[in-house]
Image (cartoon, rainbow over all chains, first blue to last red; front, side, top):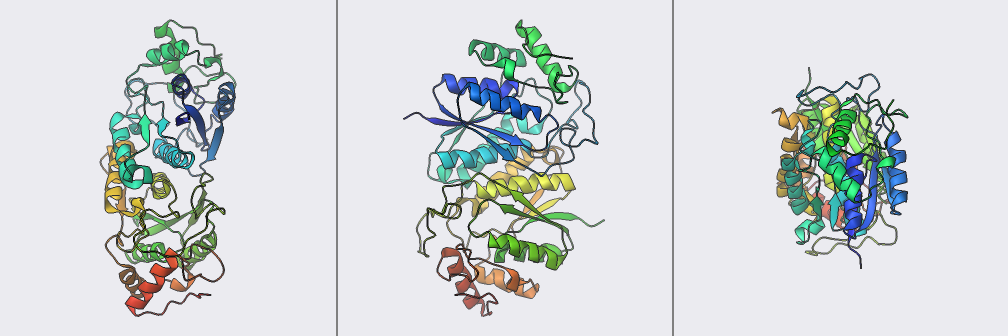
Length: 219
Length: 219
């Protein structure tokens, strides 16, 4: 029987690379996305197409909770990229905590032994919940708070991109033939990527460093 | 300005006692309940009435994820009470992890400094996510994975019932004039409580030990 994995799939570059890794390793993949009121909800259409590309089941969970972030609140604008600006206004409270909690519940329900999450502590936007110490703390929650943890076979969290630059991630995606043409990264969520928000800037620099052409259109 | 608290309110005895404690301490309370497909969804009506009783805002979050538990899956029956039976079939994967994650996001959004959760490690049903070591691990997640944690003012988790027996909890509720007549505990979720499931048994024993009359009807 194939081992099962829950893959957190936002529809962006990193999570799609994670899915390509899980696929290559032979896991039976369950893709999980979230509708949390993000203004870039276009990524959910991308996630659907990417899951279809890999022919894996895809669940979209609704989280109708958040305001207070530039990614969810239309009254706060998405800023252009700046170096070293601390925790940015695009921070969404407890986002990865909720995503991992859902994935954990889902993993125990379907009997998956591993969760893939495509966070990186190298090229990231300054979010606290993208760092290795956060993942380590969450492992403590699995060990103490779940049936699988208490019974000695805790669901594992895999972060294969944690030490990779965006360029390295793009190289891995390219080697794995990941469908990068189906991904979206722009926080502004229009039909064409803006090319100036944090997320676009990291993507553009990454493709340039990797020496690979970005198949996605910018305005 | 009043300090704010998010109170996880299931509509049962314990969470209602927690709300009475937060109310007594003068917090501005935000009540949060979950619709996770529980067969005892009657508790959501109770939660609504309890929030109205205290005139506090009440949010019900949808979690459409879980099967695999006797509390959410109609094909698994709710067993009668047994002593020492390990983690029971009424275990819902990652339930309190998800509840706390939601509460944490909500707390950061509304600016609450504390979350109240009515778990007890004394009279409980054998769930791993009701123990102090789980709460301690979750504190690690707040410290490493949230803005409030990283910036040195982490959202606090209060578990005022953690060391109380059910009888002690009932005594506290009684002293605080908590509206116990509006609460429900039965896992089977009918109009009258069954009186034989884990949750009913703990409640009945608790009221007997406390020497207080349970205002709720049993069949």
